[in-house]
Image 1 (cartoon, helix red, strand yellow):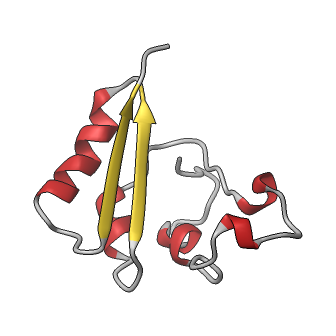
Image 2 (cartoon, helix red, strand yellow):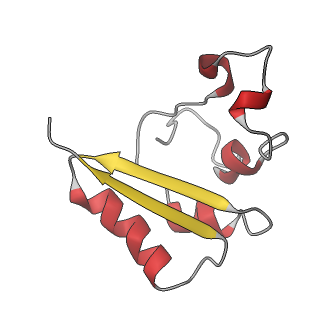
Length: 95
C-alpha cells in the first residue's frame, strides 16, 4: 500500500526496484522476513506507473484479497501486454 507520509518525489518503484531488489528473501540470512519487507499504508498505489518503472527487471505480481477491483486493475495491465516483463498470479478468497 502507498505510504501517505512518503514524500511525493520518492518513486514508488524504488520500494520494488531499489538496490538489492534482485535478491531473493531466502538469500538474506541475516535479516528476517519482517526486516526485508516494506508495507505502506494509505492510498492505493498507481500499479501501472510502478510496473512501468521496473522495466529492467522481471516483475512478479501476486494480487490477493476479497475485493475484485485491485486484481482486475493489475490483470488488465498484464492482459494487454503493456508491461513485457510482468508475471501475474491472482488468488481469490473470502473473509
